[in-house]
Image (cartoon, rainbow, N blue to C red; front, side, top):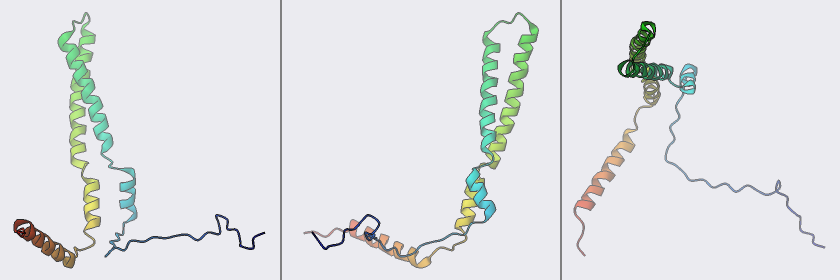
Length: 141
């Protein structure tokens, strides 16, 4: 019989490997900004309804152009649906175009809370300049 202890899965030590980074940027986010990012752009529903109404309107216009109607009531209802679909669809499309940049502007505002690190920018510029010099003037062997 062996006197060595038997280790279970719970007794084994955890191996942690870590790669170090130079810096970490942490951004603070307000509650309302988080809610907007969580729910998505509020104007997306405008785009969905706009596509729906414009496709219905185009179908009605095609029906008006290709079909013959026995009743004037049917013809006028297709005309009414197509005109209403185009007007409301274009209005919703304009509302979507106006409000679609809200998430991009919030993310830009969050990123601007941390000023750029000029030391890193200078190091990157120097390394890029050196890389261009090395590439443009290869040494002859």
